[in-house]
Amino acid sequence: MIKSRVKEYNKLVRDKIPGIIKAKGGVPKTRTLSSDAEYLTALGKKLHEEVAEYLDDPDIKELADILEIIHAILEMQNKSFAELESVRKEKAKERGGFVKRIFLETVEE
Image (cartoon, rainbow, N blue to C red; front, side, top):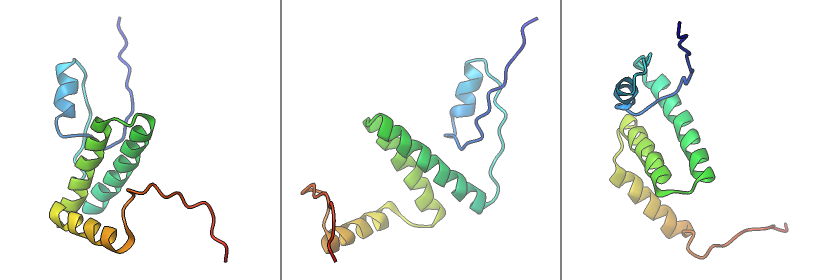
């Protein structure tokens, strides 16, 4: 008799992941996050996960995952990507960007 094993994930996944798992013969157990607070918490954890993955492998696909989460967070906050970009540009105007690669070592006070 073949014994099945269960691997725990307990994390937010993309919408098509359960179907992909089924197509590969797996049996996913899922639930829908019903509260906005629970969803935003899960998005925050997913953002940390994806940033860690990017730091391990600085690939454009990892950046795309981060951007997907940012889009979801913006949607939950009833904000648009254009609003985010406007805030980014305003901060860059006031404080600069990272083009000059300035690395602050110390500040003497």
